Structure formats: C-alpha cells, structure tokens
Image 1: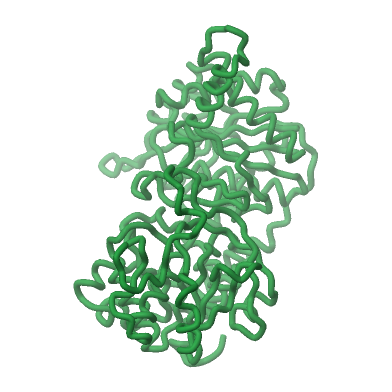
Image 2 (image 1 turned 30 degrees about the vertical axis):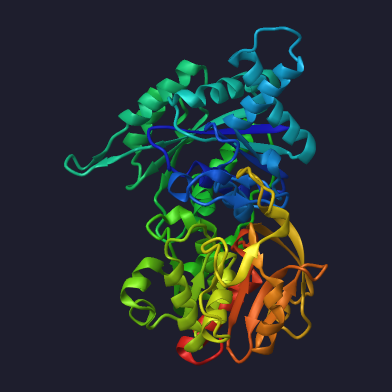
Length: 537
C-alpha cells in the first residue's frame, strides 16, 4: 500500500483539498483504488457545532458523520464512499487519548503528545488502510505549516513515512507563489520559508504544487527547485483555473504530476483516459444553453457556506449541457426590497438549508414568489420547511403558521421538533444525520426524476413536518411525494399545477457529482431553462 501526504504552506485556503481530490481522480483513472482522508488540527470533535462563517459548510456522510467540506471534493472528484474514518480532528484524538488514560490503557505511563497523541493519529491511517484495502491513501493535513496545533499531525506523518519506508510514502506541499504587481514578478521567498519550516520538522517534500495567478516560468521553477531541494519536475504549476475547479485534474495531468507520483511510489499503471472529464469541461466552457438561477440564503457573503449546493447546481447544468449563472440573493434583502425586485428575470429559485431565525421571512417571500409566478422552486431541508410555512399561511390561511424552531408559541406549528429530539440536550452529533431511506409516491414528479421508488439520501435536521396538519395540506393540493418507509416522516413535498415545485427534507446536494448530476438538480435546471426560454432542452 502506498501513502501520499498533502500539506499546505504560506496561507490557508490554497486548495489542498482540491489538489488531493484531483490527484485522486487521475490515480483512479489509472486503475488504482484510492482512499482519501482529512486531518483537521482544530479542537472541536467535528465541525457540526461550528458557524459557517468559521468553517464553511458541514458535509454529511452516509454514516451520519459531520465532516469538513474537503470531503465533499473527495466524493465529487472520485468514486470513493467516505465514512467517519476519513475525517480526524485534534478533538477526536485528544478525546480518545484521554478516554484511554481514564481506562488505564497506558498502564501508568505519563501520557504525552509523543508517542500517545501521534500514535493515535497514525492509528487512524492504519485503520483506513485496513478497512478500504486501497492501493493508495491520500491524507490531507489541514491548516498551514507552522501552526502550533498542526505540529502533532506533521510529526505523526513524519514517523509514519519512516515506518512504512520511503518507497511507499511521499509528501506533496501546496504553497503560494504571489505575483507582486509593482515589481511585475512572481516571488518564491514565501515558498522557500514554508518548505524550510517543513524541513525543520523533518519532512522533505517530494513535490511542491505552486498556487499562482501567473504561469511559472523556467527561472522561477529552477529557483524553487534549488532552494527547496526538489527536482525540477517536482515543481508543479497550480495556476488559478479559468472556468471551473473541475479543470484541476486535467491541469495536473498536463504538469505530469500523476506520472511523477507513480514513479516515486514505484507504481506501474497505464496513463489515465480523461476523455469523459474533458467532456465535462467542454460543457462548462461552451454549453449549448444558458440559464440564471437564484440561491436565497443567509450566508450569501461566504462562498463556502453553500459549497455543495453551488456545485450540485453546476452539475445539474452539466447534465443539461447548460451553463448556469448562480445569482446569490440575501434573504434579508428580500425582506427590505421585496421578492419582485430581487428575483425578477431568474429562471429558478433555490432555498438551501440553514439554522436560526435571521432571513426566514425573506425566504418565505421567495417561496411565495416562486409558487405564485410558476417559477421552478427547489427547497433543501430548511427550504422544504419554508415552502410548508408559506403554503400554510397563504393558501390554508393559517395565520402565524411557523416552525417551533423560530416561534415556540405559534398557533399553527406546521413544522415541529422530531419526537426523537425532544430530550436531546447536547448539540454535537445529535441531529437526525446520515443516509435514510425514502419511499417515493407512484406518479409523482420526484419518482419520475429519480426513476426509482426507494432512494437513500443524507439528512441533517432536528425539525420535521407536523403530521397533525397532513390532511389539511393534502386537500389543498400539497403533495407528500416522499415519506420515510414507516410513513411517519415527510421527506419530499411538491405542488399540483406547478411546472416544478419540489422540496426535500434531506440534502440531495451531498450525493451529486459532475459526471452523475443529482436527479433533483438536473430536473431543476431543465425546468429553469424551460421557464425562461419556453422550450424543452
């Protein structure tokens, strides 16, 4: 088994996760079985309790693990099915070590960062190796080299590489090469300093992936090669992509990164056939059709807050050979200026998941605007609850209908806390999480889109449709087209006499890939295009 460790330097948000995912794509297309994992140095047990402003979106796996958004890149770029074993935080490490200490596992020894913490980190790599039986495991270390909290992870991977042998483990360092406009040149000093810091710890990178705005010329490559002690071919240009993150595998292939990785790890494989990936890029760069859709949210200023939603919309576009312009609409702006002003001319409206009361009334106005003007609407999790509240107020005339999440004293709590959540006091990892079965109604639009009557989708919520109101809604043309197998929980709703008005309690965005767009997103983009152009794709 071979191991690749991806570290980052100079600044955060350089695209380590994308580099790992894109390399995984190339290795998979060479016929290798790949596994990817992310080590996060923060002390939270998982990102489930963190604000999107701190962390971006929380990406949920089939087994209910709340994980880092980079795991979304891993699943979108490759065929891997991830579990909670694929994301490790300092919080999990210390929790395990302290539980072991309390249980007497260490037989009276002084518990220390080395070896007890580092052994626990190494153990997670061994566990994943054992479970996946992959040919190659790619492990990304979160944070920036030099961060104090990241040191135990770097020490652990240094030890691990020594133990498995240098022919079986390599280090890739993702760094930043800034372009100084006034001087008109790229500067290599930050990269040199970052690699020096890494070598201080005992890790010498085999490959340096240089994130840059301008192409690396030969002179810059030679400088990085010499001062960072890396062969010239190991200096990889990772220039900002022109159109889409999905260009990344083809860019790394042009730089022959996968060839070098295979050579360093003594892997004999055929060159990858990336024809299907090139077709994805073609549809992104030169699509046959175009459409604008609005995403109405409360974290609009932060790109990473709705990362999987934006990607799934793009996948829906790829599935329809349609370029999608995503218009980010702040729900609070709708409250101030009205839905007509903020949403006019848009082909489709999407309301994503979220928590907290801010912007709720703006989202309700967006759902009403979509329903009354026959604009395609897709609601995700909270977006389904919003559609329910709006219908209750406007159509059923249930004044002050609401969710008990936002108004505990609502006279019409059409959305209420799940029974299983009533006694829950801890916030972390206690929601209804992970893949759950959903039964779709025969003849429903959801059933037609999926082409199936039983689907498994990922959840992350505490509140659910209140069944006391089910009959009243059904009589008014509100269709419950997806239910839990026991019929107790509403999973999908849609409207009669509307071209496309569907909302789900689950998060379909987590299962969408560029080469396998999710059926709900594919249908949504097709309907949005049809709404604007009045013709089928």
